[in-house]
Amino acid sequence: MVTGVYAGLLSYITGTPRSYFYIAELAADYRFAGGMLGTDHETQAIGHLLYNNLNSLNNFWRNHYTGVARANAALAALLEGMDDGPVKAQKVGEVKILRAYSYFEMVQVFGDVPIMKSAPENVAEAQTSPPQAPQDEVFQFIARDLWEAYNEMPDIQWNTYPSGVVSKWVAAGMLARVFLFYTGFYSKTSLPLEGGGEVTNAQVVDALKDCINNSGHGLVNDFRSLWPYSNKASKKDYPFAVSADDWNEINIENMFVIKMKPHDWSRFNTLAQYFSIRQGSYSNYAMMFPMGKGWGAGPVNTKLWDEWAEDAPDDLRRQASIWHYQHETVFDKDKNEVPAEYAWGSDSQIEETGLWQKKIVATKAYGKGPNGDELFMSFLSHPDFFNNAADEDQASHGTDVILLRFADVLLMHSELTKTADGMNRVRDRVGLPNVSYSEDALRKERLYELAFEGLRWGDIRRWHIAEEVLPKMYGVDIYVATTWSKMQEQGPNIADRYRATNGFFPIPTTQIDLSDGELKQNRGWEGDAYFNAATYKY
Image (cartoon, rainbow, N blue to C red; front, side, top):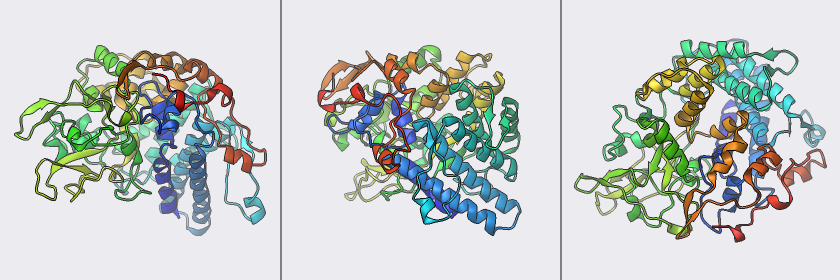
């Protein structure tokens, strides 16, 4: 039953483009929606805080409540059917962490949502829609699950359990993330607990200290070795990936990951498929090595590259995180290093900048094809699955999705303590000098270290800077369906859209109908909020 709760996490990603990670990346200021003109309407609507279909997040809703239902059933079985002891404490804690994570995604997307605290006891109860709970109550429920998990789970080293199994240290990290969002977004000083009491800043700091000192987690030596292009097959042919460490999704830094499986349309990493570069032919990919083929969502805002270069020109994380068509080199067939080539406008790609993220992306390696061609490109699903008999650019992506890593724990500790210790430890890893703590330095460090990991949207919301930074997306040079243009708003002013919605998305109309009036639609999702793909402006 606990395994079933973990399996539910897969649907949170494979439901793309209806997953929190996907929404958070495209809604943020440093990426554009992209995709194909005329087809990827829902993707483009997210990028402009508009809607194309008020029911588009129905699978998101259903998948998360399925996960919650599984967690409730597993928790009841664990509490009633196991003897007390460290194994029971570990498993109960795992389920509470996963349930809290489900609700944390839901409350960030929808705001007020129903709370299902236990499995229904009879048919009548199962057929009754629970009331729509205020956000404060949802956060109280989340906080109780994480606080109890942290305090009750056994102290274990990071590699005691298989990769993907959550631990006491994940509870500490997620507690800090929830605390920072709640206290920042709602302008509070502490995180309330269901049933009374609260979690204070000092308590969260102590939990993070415990994690830093006792979990066994740490930073990998080279930032680049966190990302799949540093796998042993691709790295030898990619001049930039010079890390001494082979990429491995199971490492000392990754703390909370969703385990994916290649070659299975219900279990592969669809984020890598959506976020990969859209090009028209395989020949183009030979000159974009090791980035693979995909559906073109999420081109990177050119301003991020430029501002990053101005702030920290020697920060290797910039090129480690962003593929820039003017700054990449590849090896040709004679192993000479030559400039990468980029073909603009293939397949009616829109909002194209020539910049793409490298963290969650299709990755390829040179291999031998059916005819023995040494330049044949095999799309990697996993470091152990390459040199296939045929290219597989869909459903082949089995790399894990990282939801929490140790670098984030260090940065959250700095933010909560207003000290530079954790921040400078992260900077030292990439050879940058120490800095004094400031709010601006912390925010830049989070942006540069954690770019494209699903966190920027939550950060700009809790820091109350969304209305300031979102309009900066517009006016940037983009390529749309063979035409150079400027990024334009596709409806009302985006700062006005953020004020109208407060960053929440529409509750699915199917769920409103099924609730018999219990669910009320979020404000701001009516009238001129509609994204009309037929009149896309460029």
